[in-house]
Length: 327
Figure (cartoon, rainbow, N blue to C red):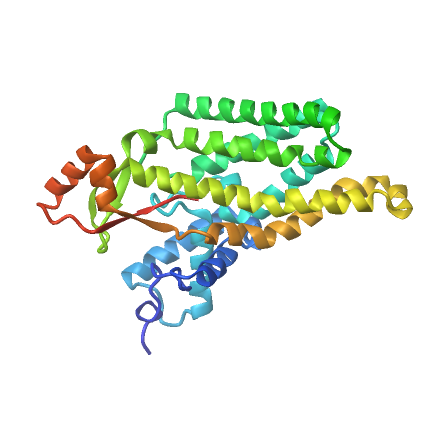
């Protein structure tokens, strides 16, 4: 009997990542919230198994389902570039439950300034961990830069939230005040992600040819990747934070619902979870994980990095270069 390692390439995705449908299936598989309860010991065991599969050392008796499950655990909890075990909040499997609890809190408790401040602080703390954990690991960030990014994102979120709340409380209907959390989240994403990954913008990120060989660095690649991540993050939050307020505006007028006062926060949290179960893989799948950039664009806008690439490739500059955009 042939060994399973000759049948399954653990470095090859189980889904077609060149299509949106394939990427959606991949991220739905990888962000499965059920795996968030898996212990660190079991995750490290999965990593050990993956390393054995790569070396062809695994027993031929192992079932393909077990290989796939270990791949799932590995992809959901370990950084794709460094192979390090990510902290709990930064794991892909925690995106749905973590986002559900925090977004539910922001939507349920938006009426007072202290509540807005508290939930934006919690949200930006969570986002800072996620952004740092899912950065391009080849561009290290200092503690000072992390602190500046965190404070700036939290400040921008609070300015947007409190500013919109004060303005809409005077100029708009109560319904519009329900969209305060989304305005804060969108504003903070435009600040938090670029600042958390500022080294990539300043120094560029590694780009590769079609064979996976590093051929140089590019700041444009970093900007493109970060821009796509910002769009994905906002798209991830939009349906739950824009549609649910409309639903709640109707529900809270029903006498039966108003009699059960304690149900408000749990109900909104549960509904947000339903949205996120679909939107997390959808938003992650909007853009390919491995982005590409035309080198002619680099030649025009960053000629010094293009010249270094020419030297690295001895004049054989590829037409397109590829890079991991992060999440």
